[in-house]
Image (cartoon, rainbow, N blue to C red):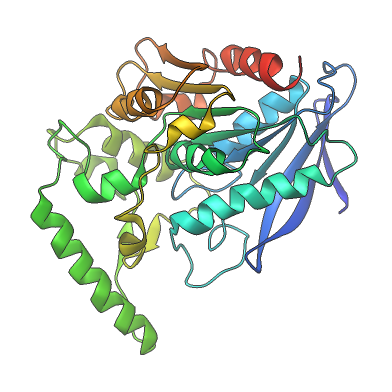
Length: 317
């Protein structure tokens, strides 16, 4: 692992590699140095949104938290970004959760890290994945989600209480398409793929949730686009996601602390509320006034102080 960059003279960063169910996962490890605060070897696994890569919002949060003294590891999920796995773009919740647990294992073996001080941060879909991972992986000592989503619920129901809410019949049609896509893939034929976000913000119907237009504005314009964030996932991902429930067993996280952060104007705020409702103490729902789901991807100004306080009290006190 070679040193690749310096970040503001307060952190070093290097590209690292670890295994997750036999697949190679590629991440960026950031290690603070003086004058960053001493966090006693506390480390945070930072997991990216569905369709994202480590260089986007996950990388931003990882870099900012490292400047605050925390060792951070942002990584590309298996099948995505620079990590290995075929078919490319597959969104497999079981694998995504395993990637998080494998990242915890990797950090636990580093000399810089205190394995009793490892936490997790998930953004968007990974807000659901880190909750799910922490329910049974007791090595994760604190959990936070920003603009969190239960991707399984979105496949089943769309975005609730909006024009993008989906009837039960829509799921049946989706799963029928997924079955056909599996056969096409097995035959070496072209198989169906779905976009994570609309390719053009201008094509989003006016009645749709702001999430869709803003996601297109972030991922499909210079604001947040990245060459390895392709905006496509195989249709058969939907039969892996449809019965995934991110927050059903959140009570298992207690007595470890849970922090869920959402904008007050986010179409997805109800996911954070469900996560908190299903959890036991200590837990907190932190709302950022006037902010939407995507706003928090590249404007962490109101979020960062809360995250620093949370992780300082829970894994570096």
